[in-house]
Length: 554
Image (cartoon, rainbow, N blue to C red):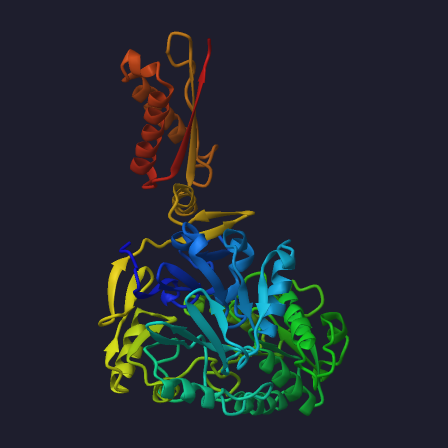
């Protein structure tokens, strides 16, 4: 990496060129601050892992230069990696009260004592936070979780506004509207760069208000007299309140189904939210009410196989059962990559005779991210010299860049993970490329997704695995036919003849080795492994992971 000197730098390690797994670094004079430290969840390309996060190796290797971590809000893709990476960093973690309370529960769930992580609570509009050469202020915005914030990062070379996730909701219902006066004041004082949310830039309008969504839910629930479930993101506390009030307006009570919903309910009430909502029923209590008197709020809006909605769809939930004429309302958006999983659950619900209601035809969800008009509104308030789109895939970043240019921003930098951007002095540009990667939670350890271990595991999932055991006597001769097994590729009974052919090819490959080679264990194992792979590819067109075992008889 080029030496930073007195340059003002921006480096995304996650969240630029993708949606999720946010990890952003700002550097000046050799010192750094981090904004967010999030996760993403498994997809079809990594079916054997549940949780994935950006590899923070770049900053971990110079951890003494990291002054602080600032969390913009409490979504998993912005703070979910802290329970796994906290011990790599010895610096304060700043968050607003709701975000801090949620983080506290996450740490406890993962067996980490909350006091071991230096969490400092922040009140937007309060005293600036000093972190080395940086000074940071929080500005309250609106989103799909309580207490989302933009960060005003002041440096000797200029001010940066990092938007975090946001929208301009005129009626957010559970908290104040975005602090546009504070945003305008920042813009009036002069902003060098705005680093901004790109998730919803293809929506030509605004994202819509939670008040409109509440009205839509009230109307839809009122159309049915059967059992109703609503699935949504557990972190959307305003949506939990909206569902509860929509249910009450139609003479129904509300029950929570899913551990993450109860956790968020507890955090919300601890922080003073949901005051106007009576205590939710448990799933057992809700199941005993008449079908027209209950609404179940369920986890599983993204088709997660172990979540409450999937268990209901496959009729294996211990307390909640749905059938013909019942209704499931999807009060959520589809996260890219989850389409197949959601459709699978919807099809299973259809087999039960359950009707699915989605935002495609009814106003039962509004996004928490800014549509084009809201992005334009943010630029009109901030008026930066430089725009750096983040929190989006490549097509989102390019569209955001186009919007910034249309708004008159003089310089726009489209950048993805690993691109080191110099914001000042001089023109903004990508000046270096930093190696990036991903870590996967594998049991109780973290492993790189590009490691040989994970490559072998992925190949095993798609190509299978085979084993061969070879026995050599004290004269380096084969003692009996090599034993070959390929579970999931060949059947030990039906494919016995083929296994014998492969065994013979292994024996021939080993006997073709020179006497000196047969005395080297690794030479023998490699010959056996290659022979099995070649034979299986020739016979069944598979390239499995092959383990070769050698036994020597003295």
